Structures are given as structure tokens and as C-alpha cells.
Image (cartoon, rainbow, N blue to C red; front, top):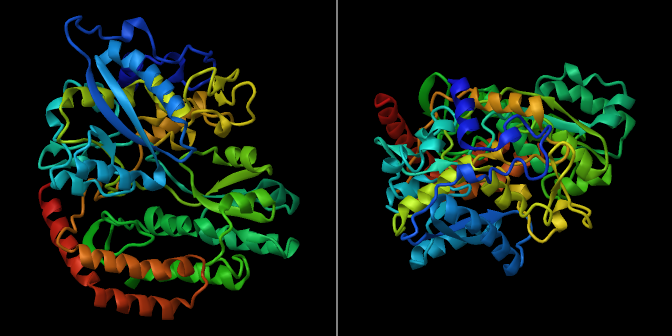
Length: 514
């Protein structure tokens, strides 16, 4: 099956050496923009016109620069799929608000994503189009190359309403640390395989550097997610494990339980508390406004928790923050039942076939993906001798060019089509990591979607309560027993038990229909 997937990728994506990583790629060779790949349109048929709403963590470009990228895309898509695309770009933070306004007003928006938002609501309220009929034609190539069971989280009763972004499925828990400090102190980081193993490491660093911030507090939630997810095996069943308000289930036991009443949640809180009391988290860890970038760039922070979807993320930290970093893996990976970030076609779309054809390109066409991520080659970026992206001549970094969306390279389509940045994965390393994603371990509840419609008031009230306590628990700044007891009491009063009961009923039905 894996051989079939790779064969299909090579046959349909037409990205040449990109599929074997960026090693050996030359500028312009891996664009996928070849005459043989185009589907010539009929001279008598006018191109369809669709609106594609996407997002950026980088700066919003000038309208003329966005139009430049739009024109380059249309020069390609008119020939390939007889479709013109209007690009509508919002910041990540404002994306869902703007998309929802466009949907509510009836303004044309044909293709959009449920960014960090449950896509079930759009599937159930009629906003998302049932694209089942397009899977074997317009979306045939995408259907053949996505990860195993990848369409389950967007399918209800045999009908598929969207496709999740094909980013990192294999994401072990990790800790990124100052490699030079570990070497200076003779710390053997190869002995670290769990969060608890880091305690002795932190003690040695603090002894040598008593004024140093040992742990970045901004990503303390990542350690909780690692501990409770891939290590314990909790599935948040539509909610996260770090701030769950509707119950979780253990692998192999489909009983929905209150995560805050489990011994494992208290264990990880106690661990964080011990680190805080030892001074590994700073006294102001729960309230500081210093960002991860600021802390790491200052040179006065030993490390930060992170997911290792990119196993060479430490190299990017080294490039970005001016100090040598390395990673250590502290847990395996488990793909939960997550139900966010699906790309969907608006049910009001006048040209759903065209929208699905463009959606297909997001997963199968390197030229389109790299235009959206990096912009125009030679203008917004160039490729180095390894075929990896670097700033073009006259610029010091990728973030200062006229157009870039490089920080969102994994948010749409197929991240394996985009060029890596310098220091990223290429060649055999990239292929090995890609295969890990195809082989990623799935939760017993992968594909389950929790529907809390009818309980929105309780859900929101519980979310607000957890938000009051979670940061102090993550960094160990609060007494564990007292805080959990107080929070749990308030959650029960706000209706969390009702949310758990509804989820249990839905999970029982889902399990019986598998």
C-alpha cells in the first residue's frame, strides 16, 4: 500500500526530485509546472471563478503583491483546470471571524478552512458541501495519496464534507534545549526518554546557571499534552487534553471520564508543581508576557517543550535564535480524534466542481502549494544548492520579502509538496519522516466527532472556567489539590457532567456503528 502511495505521488504530483526530498533539486525543476501535466480546456468554455480564503501568520502583503501571486496561480490554473482563483487572505488570528462574516453575509467564498475550529458545526448546519460525489473524479488524486483513514474525521453516515490539512500526523513529544550548555555540563541527554527524566537535567543546569530561566512557560501545555496524550493514551474526543471540558477516554476503554478526576492528571500537575517549587519555572511563569522567541533569543532560557513533527526543529531554533539547540524525544506519537482544520467547499458555491479541482491541487500540485507558501521564485525566495528555500538576493530573511506565508506551510494541502527551508528535512531524512506520518499510530477513537450543539452555554461556561486555572496548573504555580478541587467543583456546577453524558451517548453510538 505504501509503495502504491509513493507511486501515485510520483505519477500525479509531477514534482520531480521534490518527492525524494530537496537534495539535488535545481531552481525551477520541482515546480510541477509542465505542459504534460496540464488539462487543456475547451476553447468554447469560459473559466470558472472561485474564491479561496486562506490565512497567514506572516505579514499581510500589499494588495498589489497578493494580486501578483494570484495572477501567477491563474496563469497556471486556467490551463490546468479551467478555473480562475481569487485569493482572499486574512491573519490567522482574524481568519475565522472574517470567514464566518463572509458566510453569514452571502459574500462569495467557495473554499475555506475551519482553522482551529471544529468542522462538525459547518457539516451539520448545511454550510459545508457534501463532496462525496467528487472524490472519485475531481478529488481522485487527493483521495489516493492522503494518510490512512484520513477522510474519517470529515465523514458522517458515509458522506464526506471536507478534507483536513495534511500536515504532521506523527508528532512525538519533545524538549528543545541549549546543546552547548548540556555539553558544557557533561549532561548525557540520550538518557532522557520521559518528562520525569528531565528533572535531574534541570537541577544540573540551575546549579551552574542559578539566574537562568530553565523552562519556557509558554509551552508548558505541550508537556501536558504529551504526558496525557501519547503517554497515558487519553483521547480528548473532540476537545484537547490540555483544557478539556467534556471528558476523555482511555485507549481500549470507551468510558468517558472527567480528566481532572483522573490520577494521571494529578500526576502531571504534581510534576509541574515540583519544577516550579525547585525554581525551574520562574516565579512569574503564570503571568509573564515574554514570548518563547524572546526568551530563547536572550540566551537566558535553557529550553522549551515542543512537538517533534519536524524532527529537525532544533536546527531552525539555532538559525532563528542565535544559540545552538538540540531536541530530545520524551514520548511517542498518538493521533487523536481531532476534528479541526478541515478544508470545505461552501454549499452555496456556484462551481463546486471547480472548487474541488482547486482543492485537489492543494494536495497534489507542488507549483500551487509553493506559490501560496513562499511566493514567486527569484522574487520572494530562491533555492540553495540543496533545493531548500532561502531569502532572495537583497534580503536578510524570508519574513522581509514582499510576499511570504512560510509560517503556515502546513496549514493547507499537503505539506510534503512544499520546499523545506534551509536547515529543514530533505533527501532520505524527509522521506523517512514522511513514511512515519503514513505509519502514524491512530487512536481507538480516530474519526469520532463530538457534537455539543444544544449545550453551547454549558460548553462555553466550562471553557471559561478552565481558562482561569490552566496556565497556573501547567507551570505548577498553584497548589495542585486545592486548585483541582476548586476547578472541578465549579465545572460540575456549570454543567460539565451533562457534557460528559452527551459525549458518552454519542461515543456509544459511534462505536456501535464502526
